[in-house]
Length: 423
Image (cartoon, rainbow, N blue to C red; front, side, top):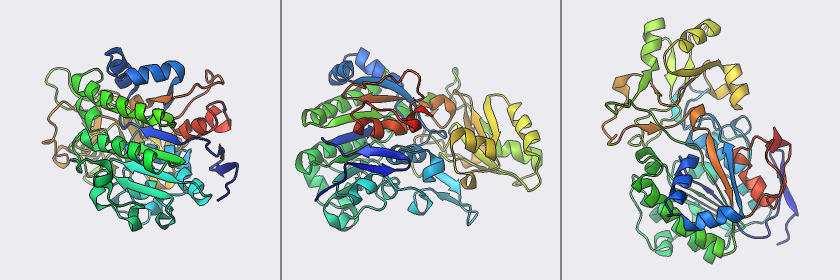
């Protein structure tokens, strides 16, 4: 099948890859994780790769959560373009609080769909099944050129729904627990097998942040996890892939230094005190089915106010609270963070680095937190790695790089910059 020289999507031009392009999203990986693991000598391949490749830093999307950033990475665009602005939202059509897993919320095609439609072979492996429907939206699995499955339910993959079956047998590993580092290792083991047997033009491997929620950079638990990835990354590059690595967001300790208890502003309590019970509605977009990691406590919240509220006055009240970094109106927040206005409340509130935002204590089950709280969502978790197995040949010194520049840079021979990168 003949293919075009390039694909235009969401305002960018992507040349057809001359070698397999493998993009890895290491969930929750602030730059210090790789930096400390390299210092400890447990990532020898990555150290060598970066010495001859590119070791850059970029900003992720705020809110610094899984869904908005994964979809930004795979569309090459911010949430204002693709529509996914949280893991959890207040549906603007129904007024119900829902998971943002349904492709009906997507307002842009993915890079995978665009290339697949033009004849490319694509493979997507993600940790949790919550992302699979979004990442694989629009792919024709009957074509034999598209694969998309999660390691969480890899044993349930079918040709009809995922473009592949017999995944467990192919990978040679059992389906791992969703609360384990093995969930991410399964992804890389699958990626190596798929590159060897299917050699897709584009492959995307997206992990879980189970380890990063539990272990700080440089700790034994973190270094062991990064050593595991190092071995698989070496195999992917040895098989001829262009490897590009980023993260969906960073991770910060959000607990008291003394007793290690979570440090939290419970916003629903605050607004109930100010306006009366239930008059305002606090939504925490970090919420997902896997709250053992974080108890649904993150660094970003959006608030729906009663009609006629004085937004400017209420923002000033919020800013007077201890440990609030910023409070913005819908218009200001959506302009600053490139978000879709119709899926964001009247206010956006972001906490400082060491503090989380919640609703009310009774609504957060923290019994699963066995280690001091580490979480994300705010501006303080915005810096992420942007790493390539080949050098970047044009200067990026004056550019604001984003994690969603990764496919563009990897597929433009790592040499180009365009208006989207420079903006």
